[in-house]
Every structure is written in C-alpha cells, then in structure tokens.
Amino acid sequence: MAEWPDIQRWPESNAEIDIETGGLTDVDMDLDMASEKMSKETTPPMDPPHDLAAARVAEKEVAIRRACDLRDYDALVSYATSEGGFLRDEIRQSVWPLLLHCDRLIPEHDFTDWNDLPPHADEDQVQLDVNRSFVYYPDCADDERARKKDELSIVIRQVLRKYPMLCYFQGYHDIAQVLLLVLGERTAAPAVAQMSLFRIRDYMLPSLKPSIKHLHLIPAIIGKADPALRRHIAGIQPFFALAAALTLYAHDIQEYSDIARLFDFLLAREPVESIYLFAAIIISRRKELLEISVDEPEMLHFTMSKLPCPLDLEGLITKAVQLFQTCPPESLPCNAWKSIPQCSVLKTSRELSDRQTVKKALGLFDQQTRQLRNQERKEKTLEFLWYNRRTVGSVAVTIFIGAVSFWIRRKGLDGPIWSYLSRFKAAFQAHGYF
Image (tube, rainbow, N blue to C red):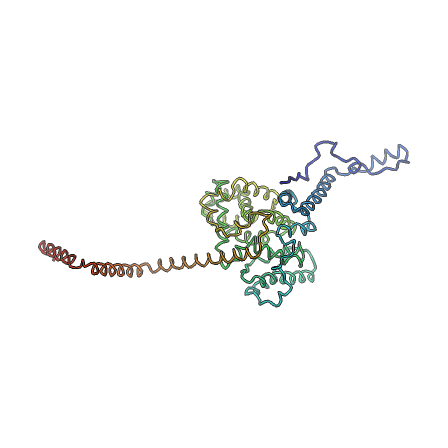
C-alpha cells in the first residue's frame, strides 16, 4: 500500500529547498552591484514551507490520477487516509465513481425511462426532506439553490423508482446531496444507487433493527480499546450515534470541505469503518465524558450525540484506522461481530476491489428482508405467549392431562391406576383425612 508523506513537514535541510523557486525574486543582471544589493534587501523572500507543501500537493494529485488510471485500489486507500484525502472535487470526480464501481456503464443503472416508472411509496417524504436540504452549503444564490434542490429530488426519485424495494429513510437525502455536489447530476444517480446497494443497504431495509445492530458495535469497540471508558458509559444505549451512522455524518457536519474530505475516507474503506470512526470520536472525548457523573445519563447521551467542535477530522480518521487495525471486527467482545448477519453489507462489502453485481446486491437484500420477517414473527409469537402466559399455561396443562389420559386408556393402564388410587383413598380414610 502506498504511503504519502506529511505535506506540512518542514524541510529537513536547506538542500531540500529549490533555490530557483524558493529564493529571492529575479534581479536584472544589468543592474549594478548596489542596485542588486538594494533589491535583495527590500524584496521579501518567499515562504519555503508553503512552496514545499504546494509542490507535494501537486505531486499527490499526479499520483492519485495515476492510481485511478491503473485502478490501484491500495494506493487510493492510502491517499484517502493521508492528510487532505483526494484534495479537491475535480479529482474526486474521477476517484469516487471508481471506488463505488460506477465508473463504467452499469445497464441496471439506466435511468432514461425513470419518469415512466411508478412513483415510490416514500416520495412525499423525499420532497419534504429535499425542501430542507442545502442549508449549510453551498454558498449560492436562491435560484441556484432551488435548482440544486430540483436536481437532488430527481436523483433520489430515479434511484427509488428503479429499485422500489429500497426503503427511504430521513437523512438519505444528506448522503445524496454530497454526491450530487461533488459529482454533478449525471454521475450522481448511479453513484447514489451504488451507495444504496453496496454501502448503506442495511439502512434501507423495512426495519431499522439491522442499523441498531451496527450501533452496538460501538460499545464493543470502546470496550476493547478503553475498558475504563466503556464501564463509565455502560448504562447508555448507543442510539446517540444513530443520526451520524445513518447519514455517514452528512447530517451533522456543516462544512462542505469537511464532509467531502470525510467521504474520501469512508468510500475508500470498509463500510464498518464508519462505525469505528464514531468509536474514535467517543474515545477522543474521554476526559470530558469521565468528568460527567454516571448519575447523569441524559448528559452523557447528549454529549456523545454531538460531534466535537472544532472537529479534528484528520486526527479522528487516523485514530479510526488505528482502532480498526488493533481491534478488528472479529476480535470484538460479546460476540458483537457474530451478531451481524452474513448477508449484512458490513460483511459482504469488505473488499474494495470486489466488483459485485447489482443482481447479487438485490439477492442479499431479499435474503435480509426474509430474515427480518422471520425474526419479527418469532418476536411476536414470544410476545404473545408472554402476555398470555396464564391462559396459555392453563390450556397447556389441560392438553397435557388429556394427552396423558388418552395414552393411559390406549395402553390399558386405566384399571391398575384406578385400583392404586382406590387403595390410596382407603388409606387416607383410615387415617381420618376424609
């Protein structure tokens, strides 16, 4: 995997500084020595660290484009994790489709006839959410923002009509909004479709229960990495991370440059690493959380539900990668990883270079849906038995007695049994019990 140096590093020696670009301004060689000296004294030198940083950014851009041409996923993962990610939207427009495997034509993602398809059941909610979109970014005129909202509505409806089995959730538009702003309307639709099928599929099932299982990985990660902090927040359910997890942080991060940078990381890593990122956020607030009493669960929940401000995005990304390496999913306590179904997107989209088919994704979606329905039937049955346990118990005893009586009569044991019962009755009468 390629490594990328820190672009902010100060040069280790003067030999690293290009004199021609980092020294003084040009001096007319025809001037006399006095004039040359005056020019040198009055012309401020350029900033060598700035020049070095700019040169390294330019070098990184070239390297990223080369990795795209070679489809070198390992290199792209390294660049996404290093400082600055993919640097700017022009480069992201080449990288993101490659990471989402929509850089080539996918026949299933042909949206030319989308307007002729039946409306999706959730389109009313989609429009309500779209009306509330583009609040923090971009900074543009009202008519431009209105045009962006129309584009966002079209992109989301295209995907939902093409794949009507997907269940829209509030916050889905936040994810689609980021993809639209970076990629543009034409590329955004297949990108949103790929994101829906291969990265957030679990969130688009008929129930949010799979999403809750994702959240329960957070305390497991913290428990392995920081047992003391885990004990301190043990009484808090991980619902504080729901909004961030569902929207890949797009709902909570207000700066466009930050969310675009974060998507560089999220799209280049396994889907589960979004969960590791939230665990890293919690651990980064260790001191603050330990100062809150365990007798104030509401305050603990509130604190953990908010992203820290200011947001050290680069530091958190580095910490999330470290957590994933030192506490991999398979090592988490309490069988947290085993509780995630095999058909979950967390387990089926682990290899970035694995180009899965839409057909396979839809098959996994159907499998997850069937599992959910079976689980719901079991839970309803158990709930019914619990609330009617007295009636059910009486009926069960009656059925048991009837079955035993039938078995006794069928075996011809009723005569001997009644004989024994008569003897017991006579013995009790002799002792004055009857």
